[in-house]
Length: 220
Image (cartoon, rainbow, N blue to C red; front, side, top):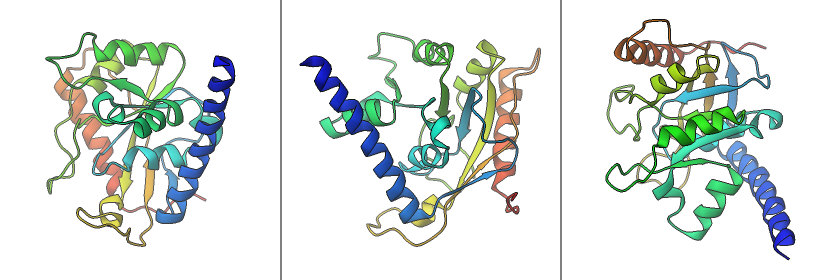
């Protein structure tokens, strides 16, 4: 019986995933701009700007199915385990790597869970700002996690990923999405260079991400 329930949950999770991807494309007409890399099944960490709760689903949605299946968003445990619906969607539909954002309460190092997922062969989606950017600045200061990943697993490509128009599609306080096209732009991979300091790398990573925010014709 337990195996049957597990199978049904996996089938349901896949069906919900397809439905979410369809709805996201219908509402936002989200598209991918592979500006610096090709959509191939290679292990990567996609690091993105963060302005909306829809950021992670947008990146996940534009990945081809064969890439989506191996890509796990890193997400806040306290958010995704808040109720039964989120506890199904986060861990089972998106296959999130859930980390505890509360230093005073957690019992394990979040970086250990992240590195474990990388060692299992997963690609990851992360938001190095940590929180949603509600300011007029293009990015909030990056936290150290991206540097720690790049330092610990130097073979993994770190891919800047810029999400455009989501805050215009769903402005704060609005209920009905506005009909704008959302674009997810993937840039050229970066790595932590030998002897590069944390601050120098994080600035370079932020610069590589901001550089993608300027309009550029997508490749055919």
